[in-house]
Image (cartoon, rainbow, N blue to C red; front, top):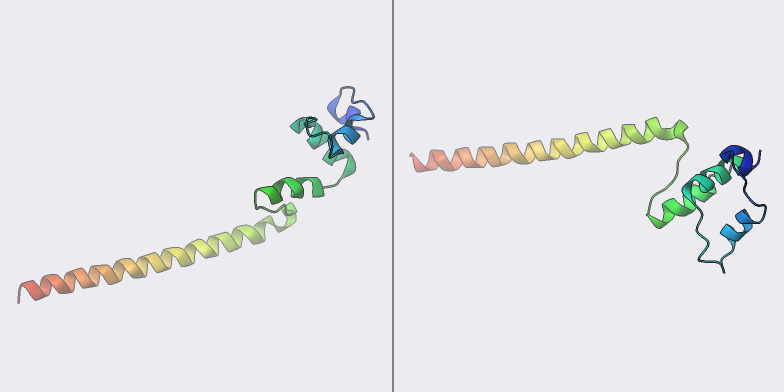
Length: 102
């Protein structure tokens, strides 16, 4: 499959090369063409290059449940710590009130 087929528009043969050329900084690839390039080359490394600039990573969807599970577990731990802190503050406040009335 060609980018032209994927986009249903003409893409000159030299355009992907122009986008890739480091010396042509003025040649910016539209997002639709980047998507087409990734689709026809089946190269998700292109996504990883963009993600890395944002300090992110690209992970195959098959692993998304593992990542989501870890995020949920991390949030549970965070909330448990917050709850313990709140309970401790509440006990301290209650103790200080009891001292005032003695």
